[in-house]
Length: 212
Ligand code: MN
Image (cartoon, rainbow, N blue to C red):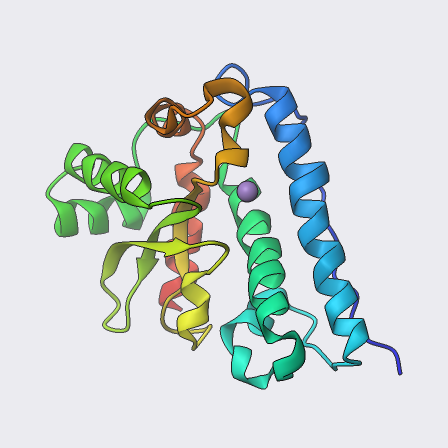
């Protein structure tokens, strides 16, 4: 039986495009080693169980109860890793930084008071995640937005209902592999640098897509 083969998406910019905020070597290893390994291990698991997985990895991880139990943890970790990194690369841009845009800017002001207060809270979530994981801005069931954090490669999508609830708008990878080469253990420096490369235009597109 032929099973789904997930593919590493093309990085939308060169490894050095986010310098000096995110260095080229970190980008190269993060993408070509870490992300590529999540994809390879995910495919290996899907094939080992001959599981007829959905083509969209976001759909796959949004309902892990459908995944055979023998590979569920592997799919959670590596499918989550594939989905999270595919999402993350599109959120970064050499032309990023500045302030939120469009409808998302309005929602952030309404929810958090202003952009600075949002940045403080998001930074707290990123720094407060013990060990490896992610901080997110995501949509909630009532269509409001919230700052959350997940461990390991868990995604807000794992709360289910991929088209409605728990959809990420923006997020930051706070695994040490995302910053250790340049910043060693100094996660706050990396989070500070992130604000210079976050693509608010893409985040706004994600927000509008979550509302649909
Ligand atoms: Mn990562």
